[in-house]
Amino acid sequence: MNTLQNRKKFKSPPKRFQPKGVAVLYEDHDILVVDKRSGLLTVSNSKDRENTAYFKLTDYVRKGNRKSNNRIFIVHRLDRETSGVIVFAKNEKAKRSLQDQWSLFKKTYIAVVCGSLPEKQGTITSYLAENSIHKMYSVKNPEKGKLAKTAYKVLKESGKYSLLEVDLLTGRKNQIRVQFADKGFPVAGDKKYGEKRGENIKRLTLHSTSLTMVHPFTKEEMTFTAKVPGYFYSLVSTRG
Image 1 (cartoon, rainbow, N blue to C red):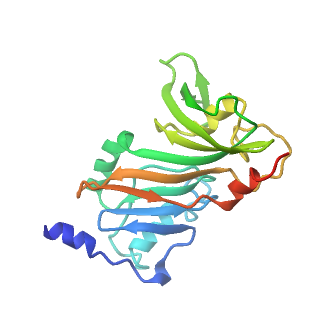
Image 2 (cartoon, one colour):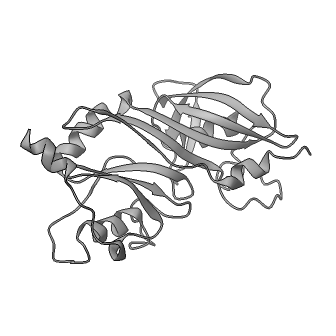
């Protein structure tokens, strides 16, 4: 009982240590849930070490003291250009628990894709593999790729774009982007998998809007949401 009470009494660091580009949605002694902005890496790569959610949030939990032993642990990732809900663990035990249950959690995205889908609701199933330059692609042989399943529903459409609610039924790298591109309806603004249409899209229009999970220790079901960028709605607000 005391452990649960301590978790509820957790106090966030002062506002001056609030990280830029990763708005804190929820925090206790075991998990840290944020809304990541588009353009920010989840973790570092060979070119960028500090402009990442991981670096910013590590500094955040250390309250500005780099000698602190406090740290965060990666549970899952969002692509650099994808925005929205992402959860980090604050200890190794919480990380293992969340990753063990990850396939059972509900992950919902909002996306804008190019064109108008003939079927307004459905599930896309394919097998995905990764090539030597870390780009994902579909294969027909299940022995050469990993199963990827994505459910979607059209929320609104214009002549050029469709706004979709997407449920990630499996968690493969770049899954949503690859599967809709394969169908001929790439995510708007996708420079990696989309077609070069010469359109002036400000960003990749993919947003992790909702995550429903079970807390690693209280076992409480929790849902976290991140507001969909208004830009997504603007793309489907007019006919054209």
